[in-house]
Length: 202
Image 1 (cartoon, rainbow, N blue to C red):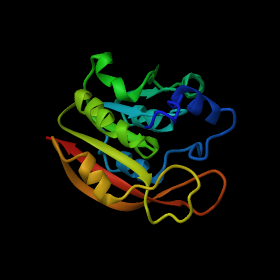
Image 2 (cartoon, rainbow, N blue to C red):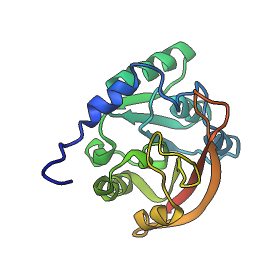
Image 3 (cartoon, rainbow, N blue to C red):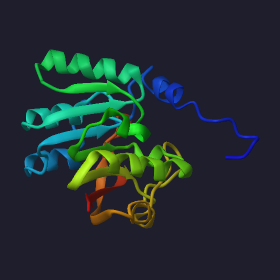
């Protein structure tokens, strides 16, 4: 960031997204995460970073996990808590910054990320990865869904390559798989071309 560029107000950015329905808030889990639950890959304590209105947290809770969601937007957390109450689902939601997870002093077996990594600036990637590493147990897994470079156009968040994912998680992690996946959005029938990454903490 140069001296001429003002610092991003991330709280304001994400709060603004909830003045309407964010494009990725489809009211159900994204298919890649639903498959994790169906395959029994959600276990123990599960954290969703950038949880939005909580669909994946509630899914993990319904799968028998101790599920926690964190989001920087208090509007999102209010909506998530209301969903949990309405559905009678046990889940916990926290307003906070995913770049500072260590401050919560908790450990998790699985961390989910639907659309957070791809909105990070370059300088935020390493702090974010270190933050996730601070709360995930050895052998725990991080599952991430992000826009891929194969999605045409320049609208929405930045596109991410497989090489960028591997570089970001090169130290202290094992990239198990990066596979093409769909990210469904509210404003068109065609899903966004994305990557679904499965990454284990060593």
